[in-house]
Length: 104
Image (cartoon, rainbow, N blue to C red; front, side, top):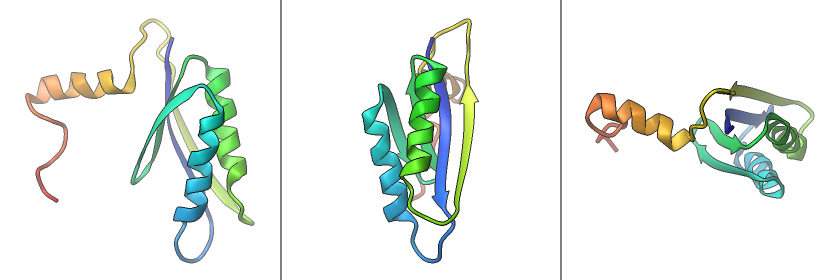
């Protein structure tokens, strides 16, 4: 079954966090997960909860700061295998349009 999570890793620092966030995202490449980063976090998909947790821990540990704030929200749907894209597709089917606005 696919386990999906929203991971947000942020150093508690002054100024831009993007360099440290990039280290967290880069750490995910060492694991058998797929991911997509957005402005509020990174959606991760893994075949097991163990792989997902290991990847999330590596992302957390990759950040070089005196304090790191990490939030991990897990969707472990155990009876059906569904990808993150399929979840979005289901919402878009109900909407009858893409799940995004046309504003730039």
